[in-house]
Every structure is written in C-alpha cells, then in structure tokens.
Image (cartoon, rainbow, N blue to C red; front, side):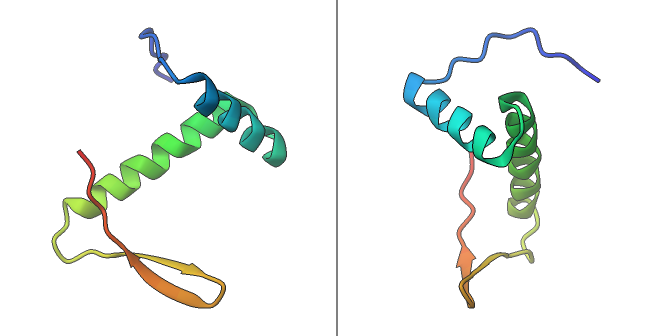
Length: 70
C-alpha cells in the first residue's frame, strides 16, 4: 500500500466532523478518509463518461446528482 508523505490540511471543524462520523460508524478517521477517497474517485469517473448518470435514492425518491468536480 502506498503511504502518502504530504501534509494534509483540514480545517478544525471539518476534522471534528470527520471524527464524529467515524466514531458513529465505529471506524477510524483514516478508514473514513480512505472510503471517502474511493467514493470521490468513483464519482469522478462518472464525469468522464458522457452517458453515465449518478442517481441518489433516499426515502423512496430518486434524484439525479449533478457531478461537477475539478
């Protein structure tokens, strides 16, 4: 596994939010960041495919999510 050596700067409130989410799910913040990175990479790949759409289904309702990533 590749280990990044760069410093990652995260605003204090965002870091506290990450800690809270990780604790609620019973995982480490490092694991949460790994999962978020995989999700970001997946969503990024959708933008590269002109025929693909990202749909979010919640409470029985489906909506298309506009993917506009840098």
